[in-house]
Image (cartoon, rainbow, N blue to C red):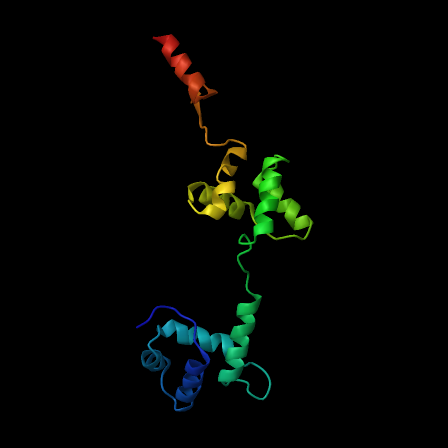
Length: 171
C-alpha cells in the first residue's frame, strides 16, 4: 500500500463507481492501493451536503473541490528573491529583529511571514553552500545575540572571553 497521497481524477472516478456497487471503503482503499484513511478523508471532504447531489460522491465535483483547496492553501513565500533582499536589508541596515521584520512586512501588505520562518531561513542560509545563498551567509551575525553565548557566573552574565579572564585571575 502507498502512503498518504493525493488522488487524481481517474482514481476519483474509480471511487465513484465502486461506491455505486456498494463495496466497502476499506476494500476501495485496497483496490486503489492507498491507505484507508485517504478514502475516508476523501469522502468526508467531498460528499455534497446540499443540491441535487446531496449525500452522493461525484468525482468531477470532488476534483474541482480538491483543486480549489490546493489553489487556496498557503504557499511558501520565502522563495522570492526580492523578499529575501528586503528582509536582509532590514536586518543589516535598519538593525531590525525578525519579529519587527515580520510585523513590518505584514503592515505594508508585502508578505504575511512569521518571525520563526525568518529565523529558520537565516540559520539554513548560514549552513548552505549554494551560490545564491552566499550573500546571505553572514546574516546571522546581524541578529541581536549573534553566535556568541553568555555564561552566568556568580549571578552575572559574561561573554566567553571575559569569563576566561575572570577564571584565569582566580587561580
